Amino acid sequence: MRHLDDLKRSRQREKNRLEANPKSKVVVKQIEQLIGYLDKQIDQAKDHIRRHIEQHPRLKSQSDLLTSIPGIGFQTSAQVLAQLGDLNRYNDVRQIVAMVGLDPSLRQSGSSLNYTVGIARMGHAHLRAALYMTAIVAARCNPVLKVFAERMLSKGLKPLQVIVTVMRKLLHLAYGVIKNQLPFDPHYGKVKVASP
Image (cartoon, rainbow, N blue to C red; front, side, top):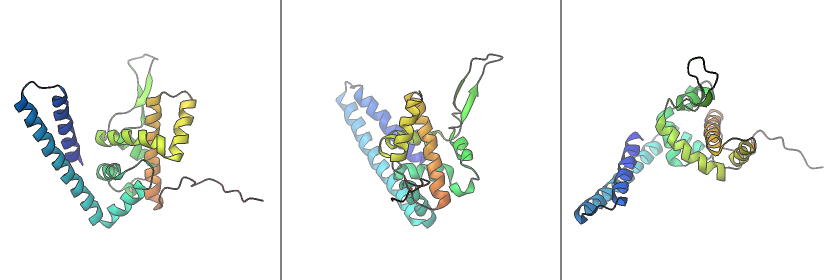
């Protein structure tokens, strides 16, 4: 997964160089060829990751559970499994949140009482980046997280703060489906009232 991330960053760097409109046609052609080569390498890496997960029943089962959560696609599930390993090895979801670096941290300077609370920013930066994009999608398409995000906005949180809370909530959902060995259910935990 880290190699795939490196390839994607290299491709983006070359695309940025191309957008800078180099004057030399030779340079443009070589950049385009390099982007094409990187695209093929990215496809091969993705294919290798997919085959690896499909060849291992436990990984396949966990990936299927993770992708049952609307907003989490195969690449994000692969990032979660690669960076965190088997989620069953954690005793508490707070351990996972801390491992990813999404736990709140206090920022102080000396004896100053002026501080802000933000995320720790330690831990798995690659997974945090993947969860960021996933949270944006999930806040729109996941029925549970959409309501959750709207509630956080109505409480006065800024959009970026809402995304971070959705990222944390995604980790909670991921931990839940793996621990319970049940696919995502948007109605889980809701009391069903029988009609009269």
